[in-house]
Image 1 (cartoon, rainbow, N blue to C red):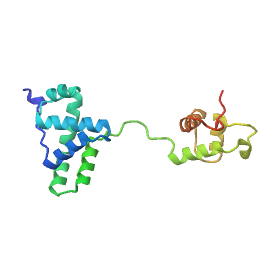
Image 2 (image 1 turned 90 degrees about the horizontal axis):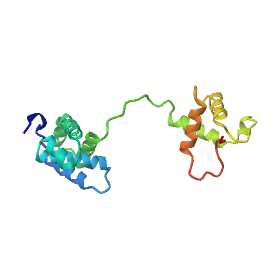
Image 3 (image 1 turned 180 degrees about the vertical axis):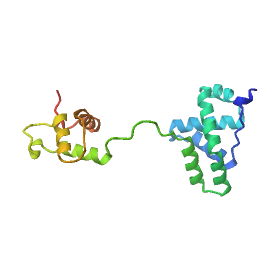
Image 4 (image 1 turned 120 degrees about the vertical axis):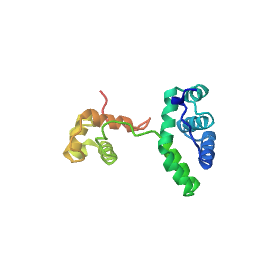
Length: 178
């Protein structure tokens, strides 16, 4: 057995029970279920390659979740030793198995700004002194800047917010189509 891939994974009794329950839960996010199954498989046999083959996953995926668990193990062990409640321990396990934050730029517009932009689009353009029948992306972006809702916004961004949030069968179009 290759020792590089066989780092022992020690699961405390409460952790084992919660991982088993999580792996069987019908309503759980399937990514969470898959990750719990990885840990349970490694608890039985620490060989990454064997677990990956058995679960039909890549070695990289199995190794990633093993390493994530090992990194969180001291905190999990401490919570169990301090007799944390079952919901608290489950929350800690789910947090350990959750997706890490994705890289990228922070959002340019707050949810409040987007809601305000959509509210403006729901108003008749005449109410804002605009000589048009329907909002265009350019007119909406200009109005949002004029009202101070946003410092700057492109017509494309204004249009994208409206298209994403539009119900499937809108009564009236919020934005003029080309």
